[in-house]
Image 1 (cartoon, one colour):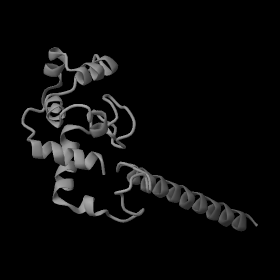
Image 2 (cartoon, one colour):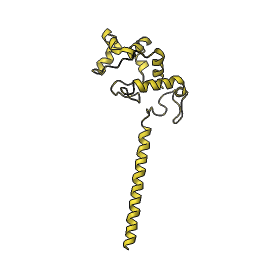
Image 3 (cartoon, one colour):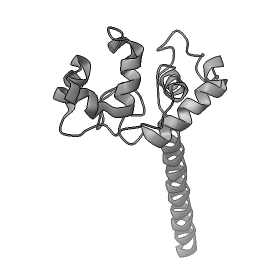
Image 4 (cartoon, one colour):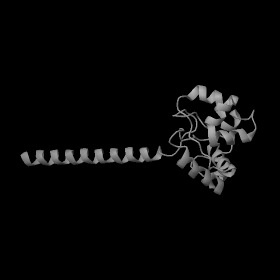
Length: 155
């Protein structure tokens, strides 16, 4: 009788161990999946169907924009592009700057504080909303670099 109870306890312990292992694996898989920006399925008209790549995401410009975003922007802007983090949401940035020449957006990305000091209305508005944390300057980004980042942001 004692031997049967011992075997049952051993079997029960093995089942609990396997269950714990499966939970760890499931948690790990779900954690890894959330590392990529979650834009949601069908949230934009140029977005591919769920689980497939869009033609945008396969382009060299898009890949360049993604790399530049990761290196320069990801620690300050939310990776989902829709929520504020340290700095404002990026989704729709081109629309929010549409009232100004495109070169103003480039200038802001390259040197926001200079534009704020000049009194540029959009730059001042952003500063008022998000101060005291100034945006880093990126004077080495070319127009093509900025366009690639914008392509990645607006995917």
